[in-house]
Image (cartoon, rainbow, N blue to C red):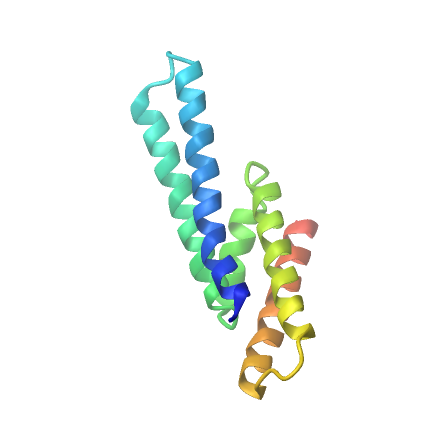
Length: 126
């Protein structure tokens, strides 16, 4: 059983849940915030999560790195995205530390690790 892939699918849902929960609690606390504005913000954050998830699934594509950097350098999202990348990196390193990975799987994990390290470095520096 490959637990990393289950974890990988879970992260976007957790992030989206946290965003939705935060936005809804803000709306409930402040009755002056229009529901439409909250809905637009939630939709925007949801779109960002989907873009990031797609980028993480294609680490070999240069536009994937640019997507992560574009969202990760926004100070409102930096901590969340960096935390997501670090957890993904921990999962990849855990997979790489396992014995007996097929060569094809090993290669994919090495590419993914390099991508995550570059993405973290780029958002930290910009």
